[in-house]
Length: 139
Ligand SMILES: [Zn+2]
Image 1: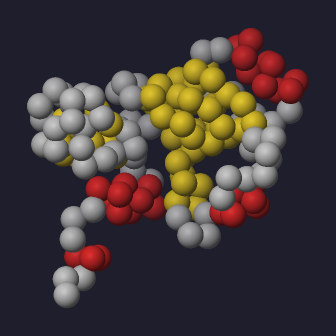
Image 2: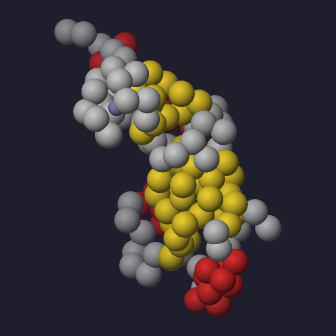
C-alpha cells in the first residue's frame, strides 16, 4: 500500500507553505490565471496543468464582518469572536480570511467600512492543528 504522505498534494503543500510563512497560489499554464488558496485544478478554466506561484501577501480588503454564531470549527473557539472578510490579493484572486487589526464591534466595523478600500497583508495564525491564513489591515 502506498503511503499517502508520499503522494503529491496541493493542499499539504499549501499548509506547509503557510507554516513557513509563504503564501502560494496555483498558476494555470493554460489560461494564466491564479487560484488561491491553490487547488490541483484551475478554478477559471478547469485545466489540471497548474504550478505553484508565490504571492506577495499584499491585498485589499473588500468586505468585513464578524462571526455572530459560534465558531465554525473548534480550532477557532479560542479566537472568537473575530472579524473575517473578503480580500483581493494584489495578484488577482479574491480570498476569504480572518481579518486582524480591527475589533469585532459594530463601531470598529463601521469605521473600517468608511475607510475602505483598506490595504492588508497576509499573516499566519498558528492554530493547534493547522496554520490558518489571515490578513492584517494597515493601520
Ligand atoms: Zn486556467
